[in-house]
Image (cartoon, rainbow, N blue to C red; front, side, top):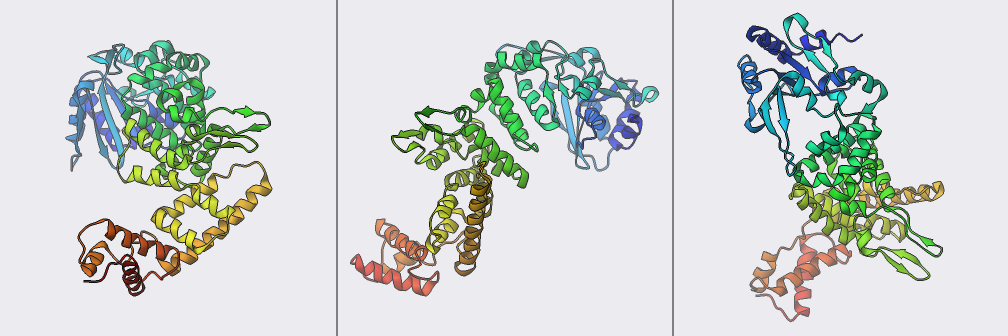
Length: 472
């Protein structure tokens, strides 16, 4: 038997909220994920409060009891307020009723009773609430059978799912995300409603879609979420480039593997070894360039030439569309997607110092993550083949360490800059400066000269002379 009262008394903010509710004679409750997670013994860092009255004023009253007082963030249009205290997020809302326009997921919000507030919420497992009032402190209320659905491990809406999802289409993605996070199934009626209303997801702001995708990517086994997105029809709407990976095409005896199935295997493999969300994005997108580059070659089968380069371009388009960060995060994902074939090519060929230098130069500090993805990309069911690939990757890794130790090429810049070239030959910024600088870089990467100033300077003089350029 869970002692919910004890849980509330162990949290300072819950204690203060209970005291304020009693003093002001306001009905107040802790609701949603915090209650659910106590029951399923899951760690949580968010606590949501609902009060019959002004949630923002209630939050202000709580903050006034704290010293130092945390910053209170207020969303007036939604009548909510939240603050962070001791690494937990506390959100307050007044009980409300909502009505929705068909063309927007932003509701028209009006004050309401706790009963009306509960009916507008998404899933039965998130409607469980605990009283904060003195006489009933810790009493659990379960008006829609959430406890039973937790026992059944079932995601279910309190009202008709078509109405629930039609009102707020983002709830369709939340259903899938909760199923993946908690290891639950989605009730058949709910899943059918998602299929029916998949098109409605297009009215949701891309930032909110990206937020849900990020949460799905960070679950223990992200493939669960993406298979559900695919089966429901949502994937085709929000990530058509990933949806296009699904299916197998056959001509005669030649067939390619289902690239979506393979991609999600790679994603799960990466998730087992790394919590880096951007490496998980790279895993999801690493083969996104295959559908546009797919060709059938008679007598050979299916080819995807240039898919890594196309994948880099598509990665940028996807990040732009979803309003994902267009900064070093995008640069990182594009780089991993663009280079993901390089270590595999090294495995299949003789590993030369020159090829290793170029990989180190292009990958920089991200070479270790690139190698993690490449290992995760081996999804063959042939154990002997997998074992041989991993053995060859070990050789590549050893060579990377050896060459890096010797040549120091991670995030390397050639020892001769453009400024030195211009000063030496009395040149202005020009094509000739770029040609000389590139020649020096290539000579170092090919091992013709060592990575030091003296050898690079001598090479620069000789190369410039071959171009009929003399020092000033």
